[in-house]
Image 1 (cartoon, rainbow, N blue to C red):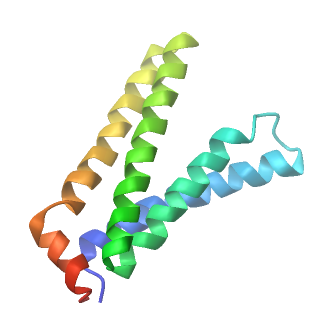
Image 2 (cartoon, rainbow, N blue to C red):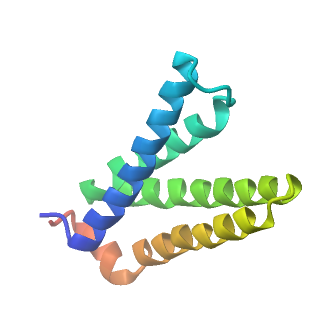
Length: 122
């Protein structure tokens, strides 16, 4: 069985992946005029974390850390883009959202959690 904190993280990244997939579908279907790059990047990175976390294999932990780092960078890039576009409140919210990815990285690198992934026990 997957430990409940890992299951909650998987649900978090699954929600991000689902929302990104909806946006990708809207862009591809022509219902939105947004560029495809941002939602596609969010979809790929969040799906990687979503798939990697519940497997509890050593490579999956590295995948989750790597995708969390990429999502952290992407979230901070969104905050920067919002600052440039003159929306400081949105940038502040995005920067606070980046803290979630930092917490995920810190949690997954704890020795107790590393042991779950090293042994592969559920």
